[in-house]
Length: 387
Ligand SMILES: *Cc1c(COP(=O)(O)O)cnc(C)c1O
Image (tube, rainbow, N blue to C red; front, side, top):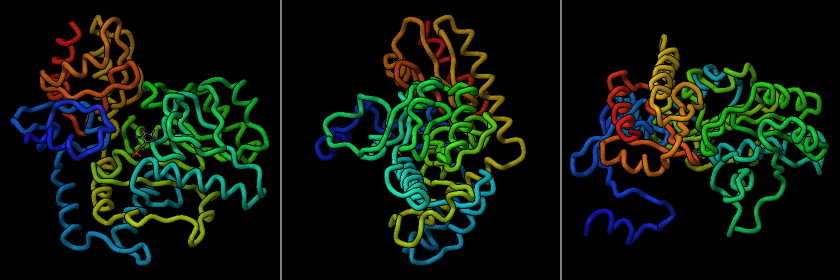
């Protein structure tokens, strides 16, 4: 039996997968089981931020696996302490919680928001505003938070206490931000929703209204964080710092991690016994995360991400089939004039290029370490497909 048949026989069919069996990778190229190479403009799915098998990252993960692969969260480890310090200092937060995925990071933020409000104001102030077209994860709670009706099927009853506001609609926000609300949660650039950045004015208003009412701000930077947009956090482009920020996808270079960062205001909301995770803060993942942070914090690295993003944007806008380009840094959405994004992504596989979609757009999340030569090679393939 071939890999695909065997896989489909035993694994539930919850994904629409391409007929491609990935075998290995090196640098910014992936290779399938037949030895065919692909330039990866998706970093897996925003996860392999340093590309495949970056030497420093491999060494860090390997050394940690040889030393201590896991221990209970009843004990302390140095690698967790080192990673937590580096991450908090880099991101400009005081405290953090360790989980294993974006959804878990968001669950943590939601729990903190509700407990913060409960501790201070008592019951009845539990609602969280999220935006229409947002994406916050696949657990029941984060699905409930997700502001897209297509996700609100089958699994009833959903978790109560989420109110959707239209992105960039200040009147809608003002009308719904009443005394039952404890937090506003948003992506600065909606990723799955189509690589749509929020308006600066709308973001300013969120912070202003929330400050007036002691309502917490939560940024879901699971996709936009860790240098993806050319700054460590997308919030840095907007000049704001939320009370809580969640990170995951690219944070540990391709091993599972999710964190919730907090400023001083919410630093002591979680008390012993109120939250936890068996694998949260896994030492191997922390070692991988430290390697990513070292790289992202190295001199000039984020400026390069910005420059490469601008380079790609400029080239894309010269392609007649491209209608518009959205996003920031190396998070790029491409709106096409006539072709379907899904068809383009499928055709690209045949040509040795991995792309992603976001709604009706082609989405690029290339490794932050991608070279100009690889960018040119990938864009040449894309240009050919868009002829
Ligand atoms: C991917 C994503 C999530 C979910 O992360 P998982 O690791 O799949 O749980 C949540 N929020 C945003 C913005 C994402 O892009």
